[in-house]
Amino acid sequence: MARSTTSDARKKDTREKIALGGLIVKAGLRYEKRALLLGAFIELRTLLDTNQGERERLTAIGAAAFDDDHE
Image: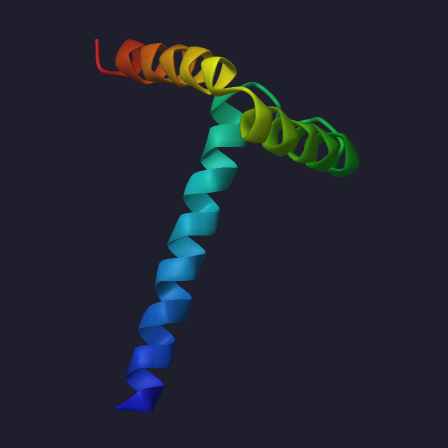
């Protein structure tokens, strides 16, 4: 039973990582260097921790990008 649970957790983790990679592609950042992307994400984490208004603004931009896909 433990083996099945571990396998399910690994599959879920893999699906999540693939989905996150898809966000990078969707944002048009596929060919950027990994160090640049990581730096941007670290900077974003700091920004989001200190600025709720920025979180809301960026969420609206992302939601609009997803809505464009469904039209």
